[in-house]
Image 1 (cartoon, rainbow, N blue to C red):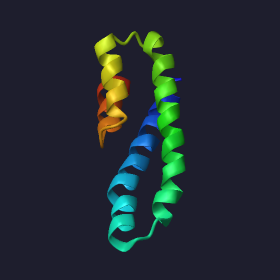
Image 2 (image 1 turned 90 degrees about the horizontal axis):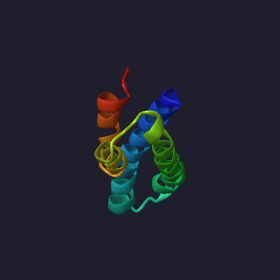
Image 3 (image 1 turned 45 degrees about the horizontal axis):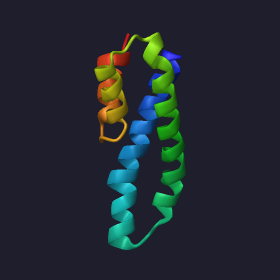
Length: 91
């Protein structure tokens, strides 16, 4: 399960970065909403899967409340999931 969470974590992070730094500027500067529409739904699904899997892994990985809070917070901070992957998930 930890390996799957690592994959989801990276995909969620990449989708967030693309949405935030590529799709959103294209929407606001050029008026093209296509990229936001293409990336929005996959990012939303990955975000939800990340949160659910974090909840499921909390007990298995024996995360403290503080660590669990950081894992959840990382999902809304750009590059946060990459930090979590390196600090808490890497073997």
